[in-house]
Length: 217
Image (cartoon, rainbow, N blue to C red; front, side, top):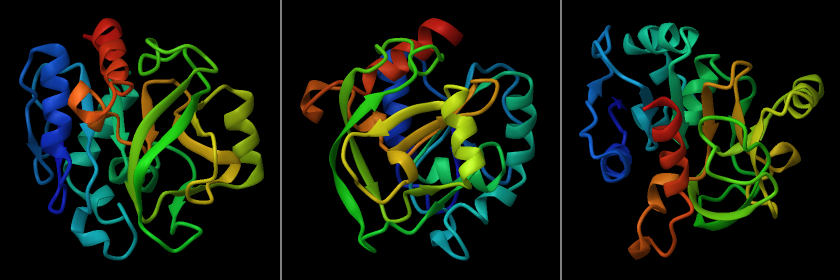
C-alpha cells in the first residue's frame, strides 16, 4: 500500500485487503525508494495527495516510490489505483489519458451502477462480462478523457474494465476504469474497498479483491 500525504482511503483499502486475504498489507510511505522484498499487489489508494495542488495526482506521481512502482509494474506485478490512485497512475503514465474536473463542477459522492466490460483480468476474474454492479464514487476530478485514437484503442483491445451505466462525471464513453496493455495495472474511480461487507450496503467490491487473491496471491 502506497501512502501519500493527503491519502485518506489507505486504511479502508488496507482493511479490505486484510478481510479478504487474511494478511496485513505493508504501508509504504511515498518517500521510500524501495518496496518490500516480497509482494503480489501494489495498491495506490484514494484521497487528496498533496491536497490536489497543481493537478490531482501530479505531485504524487513524482514521489520517489513511484519509480519502484513503475519497475514492479513492468515486471508484471498487479497494481491497483483507486480514485486518487487512478489519477496518480495516469500522471505517472502507467495508464493513458487524464482525469479532469467533473463535467458538473461538483464533488460526486454516491453509489453508482457500473457495467463490467472485461472479466478476463486478474482484477475482474470474479465478475461476468456485462454484469451490473454497484460501487460508491467520491471524487471531484473523475472525468476521464483521452484523444479519440486512445479511446478507440482501449475499446478495441478490451482495456475498458468498468463503465458507468449513466453519466456520473462526463467521462468519455462512460469509462470508469481502464487497464494497461499488459492487463496488470487497473485504474478506476469507484471505490471497491467501500463495498466489501454487508454493513456497507453491498459486497460487489469484495469480488475484485477475491479475484486478485485467486490469481496473484
